[in-house]
Each structure stands twice: as C-alpha cells, then as structure tokens.
Amino acid sequence: MSSIDNPHKEIVRLLDGNIRALSKLITLIESDPQVLTSVYPEIKDVSGRSHIVGITGPPGAGKSTLSSALASIIRDTGRTVAILACDPSSPFTGGSVLGDRIRMQSHYTDPGVFIRSISSRGSSGGLSISTYGITTLLDAFGFDMVLVETVGVGQTELDVMKISDTVIVVIVPESGDSIQAMKAGLMEIADIFVVNKSDRVGADRMVKDVRGALQLSDKHVVSLPPVLTTRADVGDGVPELLFEIDRIHSDHESYDSLAGHKAKKRLEALRSTTLLEIESTLDMILDEENPRANLEVMKLKKDVELGQIDPVSASRTLVNLIKNLE
Ligand SMILES: Nc1nc2c(ncn2[C@@H]2O[C@H](COP(=O)(O)OP(=O)(O)O)[C@@H](O)[C@H]2O)c(=O)[nH]1
Ligand SMILES: [Mg+2]
Image (cartoon, rainbow, N blue to C red):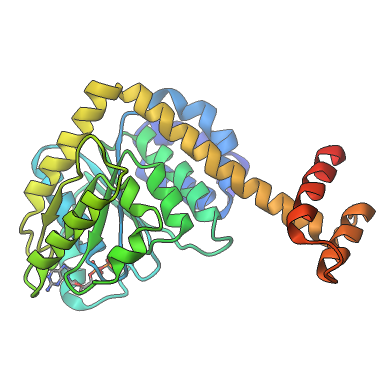
C-alpha cells in the first residue's frame, strides 16, 4: 500500500475531510501503533476537541446496541459521532442476528456517523495504544463525539477507559456477579452506570445493588455517579443517558477546564503505554534467545528458577542490573 510509505498525503486528505484517508490511517495505526509518531505532529493542533466516551461492560450487555442508539440521539442534536468498537464479535461487523444488523444499518447512509471495528489481535496491551492513536485521528477529523466500545473488565479495557473523557459501565439485570468483578477498578473510574435490558426482571434490584456498592466505596467522596436504566434495543432511557453524558462533560469544562482534563488523560496514556513498553523490555531482557542477553541477568534468572534466590529480592537486583545496562 503506497499510503504506508507516505502517511503525510493521507493526513492532508484527512484534514480535508476525506473519510477514506481516515480509514486508511486507522488501518495503519491498527497494524502498527507506532505510526502515530509520524502522524501526531501534523494533527495535534486540530485534536483535543472531541468528547471521547468509553463504553464497557460484559459481553452481551448491549454495549453495541446502546452505542448505536446513542449515535441516533447524538445526530438528532446536530452533532457528528464516530463509534469505535474494540470487539471482534461486534454487530457492526455483521456477525450478529438480523434485527441487530438492521438497526445498525440505519447509520450507513449518514455521513455524520462513522463506524469502525478493530480487532484485538496482537499483544493485549497493543489495543490500548492503537485505540489512543485512532481516537486522536477521529478527533482530528472533527467528530464531535467518539464512542469507544470495549468488552470485558481486564487491564486493557481499564487502560482504554482511562483515556476516555467520560466512562460508561453497562451491566444487565442478570449480571449479578459483575458488581463483584467491577471492584477490579472499573467501579472507580465509571462516570455513569447503565443497567441495560430494563425489560428484564431484576433491573430495579440491580440499580439498588449498584448504588449500594457505590455508597460503600470510598472513591466517590464528592458525588456518586448516576445509575440509569435503558432498553437499548428500543431506545428507552437513551436520551436521558445522553443528557447525563453532556452534563458530566460540561462539568469537566467548567470545574477542571477541558484543557486540564485532556492533559490528565494524556498523562494517563503516557503511563499505561510506558508500563507496556517496560513490560516488553523486561520480557526481552529475560529472554535467553536474545542475542544481547546479559550474563548476570541470566544467572539471576537461573537462581530464581532453581529456588536459590527468592523472587522478591531477585527483582530488586534485577532492577539494579537493568539500570546499569543503560
Ligand atoms: N431484551 C433486550 N435485549 C437487548 C437490549 N439491548 C440489547 N439487547 C440485545 O442483546 C444482544 C447483545 O447486544 P450487543 O449490543 O451486541 O451487546 P454487547 O456485546 O454488549 O455489545 C443483542 O441481541 C441485542 O439485540 C435490551 O435493552 N433489552
Ligand atoms: Mg459489542
């Protein structure tokens, strides 16, 4: 592909509103997140204006359906919206039941809605790095809102959510144990909880449970995040959800100043990306096949494997060794 050699040409076209250039650049970043290095200087001055909304929760909770319904309501307010689904089983890619596909298709003729699925192939951490690059592209293109859907509650999802301006956690009445799972960190970073599938029994109970769990957590000293109910497949509760999303965003703008808020998010991305970088460097250092393997490190590794040195003190020695390797 010629665009690989010359992203500059595509960037100029992207800034000119060319959707195909946007798609090409997304593909580039998806296959190699480092592409952002050459793209960023040319787009940084026009990015930082989109409202990035992260949507996460267990598989089947209705995140894609909700994203699609939200997109419709966002369009009704005259804004443009991009949906980035980091979920290989997304109905946006067509792998779903007919009714879902038909609902999603209503967006296909609207140039104010851009939908893209990215797969999480490759390293698990790579997803959060490429997601950062892709949302920055969508931002530079000029979408007013970007909805980022991720599936699950693991570290990758947490990283993706941390770089979003506003975080929505979607659960369903039957996901009783997911409240437990959320203690892994999502509880703290959620700005809004949505109990979707309000047509199912137990929705009110779930709302109460989430509120109860929130009250017990000491992370929310100022105010508790709202807990809303929706029925995404028919759109019930979705206007109310957009109202809350907008309200929280205008709070960011007034209390924190949007620039300060974005600055915090960029630092978050720096932190998680650096951790991943350090992790892969560590794997490389510990790899015996590495032609530059250090003898002292290899000996230390062997001693730990044989139980001659405990891993706790060995880790300190290792960190010191690595510092000296620089
Ligand atoms: N009964 C009911 N089904 C829903 C609702 N929202 C979504 N669904 C269905 O739940 C299934 C999973 O939805 P999907 O959006 O793909 O979930 P995701 O995995 O979280 O993205 C689909 O068949 C949807 O039609 C809802 O509010 N009520
Ligand atoms: Mg989905």
